[in-house]
Picture 1 (spheres, rainbow, N blue to C red):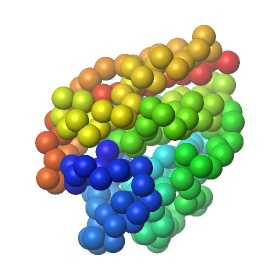
Picture 2 (picture 1 turned 30 degrees about the horizontal axis):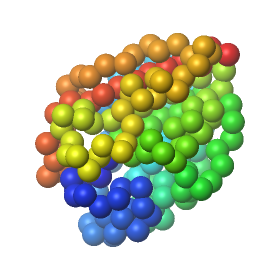
Picture 3 (picture 1 turned 180 degrees about the vertical axis):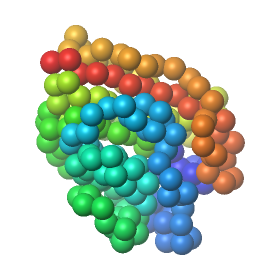
Picture 4 (picture 1 turned 135 degrees about the vertical axis):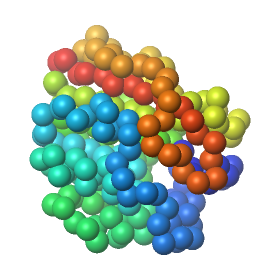
Length: 198
């Protein structure tokens, strides 16, 4: 979700360009705590990092042997991320308008990315997970969010999209393990980890 806590549309490319251009660094550069906790023991393969921002998660995955495709809608964010290139494919993409390869990734990592209920992106990202692969989604607890975020998915919304080929391994709310972005009151994460069995 938008780290500023403002009510602009966080799915809009101009919103993110303005945010990244407004300061030299938006995020800490460290990997998200949900990713570290849930993916530390996964065998490396092909990973899709959705909404990669300045690249903290993508670099963490690449350092552990993953072949990473990192997507973001902001060219400014990608330019910063690619400055410390670690063999990662940095891709500027509006997921609502762009295709994603089906069944191509052993891990689809979605951390604090504003997944809308109504644009088909959640289904597209689930379809991108290969058999035996993991879909990992971390978001802010809705109790920490304002009403302007009501149109965005939480883990339970994703669970309702899963078919018989999926097993839910984690679906819970937990305290954050890393500091929230400055100016926000995020204290808890909602976490979904699901395995595509076939």
